[in-house]
Image 1 (tube, rainbow, N blue to C red):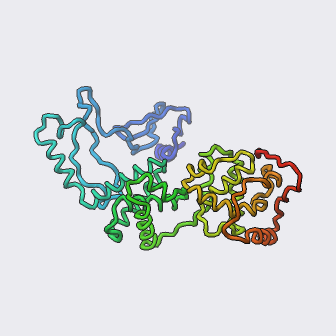
Image 2 (image 1 turned 90 degrees about the vertical axis):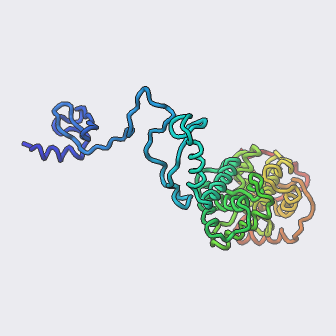
Image 3 (image 1 turned 120 degrees about the vertical axis):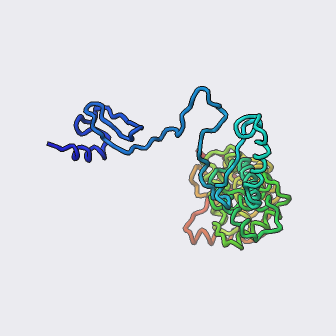
Length: 366
């Protein structure tokens, strides 16, 4: 026969009563901290933590008074962990407990001035700026936190003294986007910030990267492609074709020296013509932020090798690639020769040009 001690040890690590089985109802005695079987009275568990409120509420309580006796968790974004004592007030004015409490407001204001150091006040202002910028372009909390932590390191190092906190904040947010794999251009960040110029943000960005040895992955066209195609209401299959065209153009080498965002914009413009649903260059420019002239220049480099930019998957045929818009000769000659050499190295067969007299048929890929 099992002893009381053995039954207790068996029940201590179980949610069921060893005497009555799992169907017995277990009740919790918060006053004693025990879990007790209602059938036989066996103490199934002890030292139960009460996860309820630490206070009791009464009908005549002042509902505006916060009954909590503890503050928020430690905040690593501030120098003192944000653990300083605060004098709180009541909504709409008032001091400690009532609107008639003499000196409550003045004491609260004095506390607010002295509770935070000048460094923490400066950090708080910058954090609000970062949060506002991030909300305007729908950036997540992880990016905001990374940007704020970086700003704190930069500010405490005092290596960017003389630069405005708005420019430093924008640069930190841009770096955080790069580190999180969310591609945003300088132009987009500056547009939602209070920084004076794009150049000011660029200078802060370069100093931060150099002085703090920050490693950033190389930006690629596909980081922008999905976002731009979504704004232009292009299907996912078309987005894949745009990525393929941009990637092959880079591998061939016809867009060397072009920034990835301009290559992405040109690839979208070219692919939209190939599938028979051309997008106006001004529309592509509007969603990408790339100047129309820049898109045209990148397009001119890609046009001569257009038969090499698509593998033929997704319904793309040579006839669809043949007679798209020709904007003139590229700035850098020799693109076709590079494409031929690339095709031999990779074992790629280009889409064959349309024979003379054959009708060009445009089809949108499925």
